Image 1 (tube, rainbow, N blue to C red):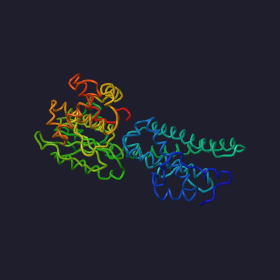
Image 2: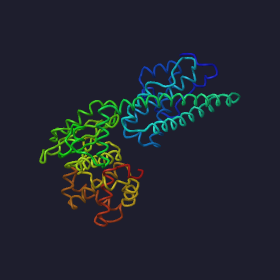
Image 3: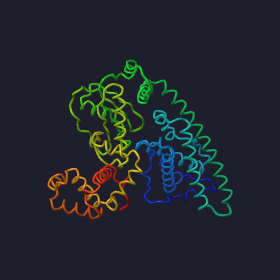
Image 4: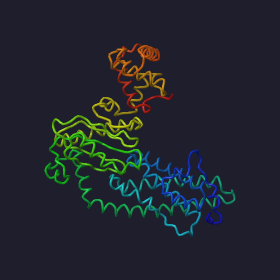
Length: 431
């Protein structure tokens, strides 16, 4: 292990304050992680990994624009983790010749520019991250440094942290401005800005916009939103969107990446084309479709519907494979526009039936199918592949928990069951 500056040996005693944080959990490149371990040891690096993850989560909570799924979060976490590791190494080895900012921290700038996150937003994120990192270092210092040295060490760490974040912010600002200049002069930026102008409802010259996009806005469109749950699935996203739209009869497509692991796309389809084609059912790709619409208004509407379906899928925990059709979830999507109110309604309407766990889920599913099937036990038994007696028992048990027959307040009960089925834990109470 490389020698640590005298008086800073306490940094080698750093360790995560929660279980489950290992070097394999690091977001950074394995070579960089290995170098840091060689300098300060594995426990201290694991501590930095945990703090980096906490910083990323804190930034997303305060500035939701940085979120949007697993892939954007992992990109952000790579940067926050890298900054904590670099600060740790600079404190431990100030004469090692290490730069204040790392390539991994700068890597996120390209995505921030393309997603339309402003420089003010980036700098606010840096300030939030710095506050979280400073708190972590000072808390560790207080716990590990001898009382007779504590005041001097805390002042030194605080001063060095402020110097660190000043240099970090300067480097990020320079890189952001350079990337912004590159992006705004590119054809991709022009197309993305044209799409955003159309979606905002601004008046557009349809012929001119179609030429810029290479896509005829006067056609009939079907829109989709596609995203991934892992960075590794990002590379094939554009091709996957194009193939899905082609399978639905699209003769031309428009694909607009909106950040790491996310894109919007449209396909121009005939007035009477083939029905929906199967979507990928892999563990990482998710897709939500709007319904077809004609012209510029249809272009906007099918996109809005795809976004609503995407939001519903994310609220439910993003655990279902394959595609989400807006037509299939339109009622739940509209009712879940206020998810807090939806959860209050579900828990009030279902009572103890609105709890997490397999048993309650089986009762809710059976009761929902029972109401959908106009209370036909035979139909529900066939749909759920269980005995008719099992259906009858579950319905009776659900009514006992509700404290009323299923036919009483039927509409409210049906809606509450539908929301619970679509949104799951987002609207349910504890087990």
